[in-house]
Length: 165
Image 1 (tube, helix red, strand yellow):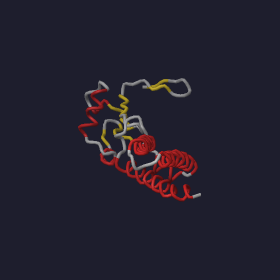
Image 2: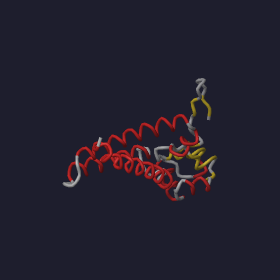
Image 3: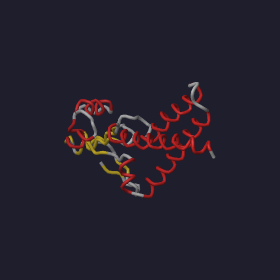
Image 4: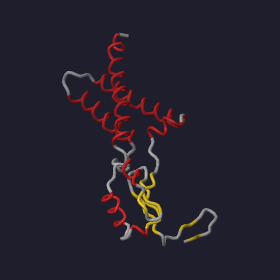
């Protein structure tokens, strides 16, 4: 029983750090994390730190690291379940695609909110072999940070099997 009482603060502090980092990275890191979601990145960073601390630091015990890592895994599962069940929490934690260009016109508010510059957007458009903004039907910042560009001359396949230009 003494061990549980001694390790409870470790679990609590680990959980609080997890929550703060998820929120902070969600608010400040949108579109800059590549293929990892914010929750994935927090898990990787904190799990590595928890295990490293308990394995390397001579003043810490393995049980503290294991409780910390287990708390992170359980917190991640809890947050994932709650995000699926509650729309507002899902919206806070999970990014949605952002329309940056429509019919050759940059949506500056969306560009600014996404933390991107016009130069970064134009670079992404050029990388898709489109030189002129007027040739862009849509440019979308996807949840993984990629910018997808649909040119005006792109054939779009519809779910009914029809295609249009």
